[in-house]
Length: 251
Image 1 (cartoon, rainbow, N blue to C red):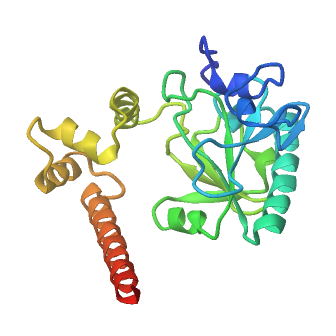
Image 2: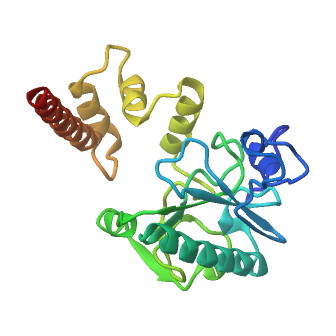
């Protein structure tokens, strides 16, 4: 398993250290801690730019690349903290708590090289969506993550975790995964832009996505991804236009 290489400046290490005046801390009134909860080896903090209210990150105080690299005792502590926070989220927002971790499990493989568990109120069935696309198995909580983990995982309830083999958390990810990570870090552009740039130097086009699908055979066609995003965008535009017409008619 690759050893964690501590970057010169790790924002998660700084954010988990109460002695450091982090950017998040500077947004709060004096004397108010940025930690929603903490244990001897973990802290829970709100996220910057969160998608929804109640979005938290659970961060190990020690620099490590992923939760899959933590020892059994540390994982039991993490599992108890996540369960406690999940109950608080459900009580406060009336929704289940969705938890997950993602990213390359290799040094140099992603922008934030420090484990952090996402936890947010959501009705989204992420595990169900993944079940339709990836094979996996259930283990009884974070404390039962196997050593040398070569899979990503989604916490589907307070105690259960579903493992998905061969995904981004593998210690030896596919070269395309690493190439996309480097592309994103360099350009801040997404997967569709990466596929177009990797396939052709010509301007982006639907045919370029088709060519990428034929060459690399991704589990999920990028052409299908583009179609889904385009359809979603059209629906949002239509709803926005309908609301605008309603406002004009009322005036």
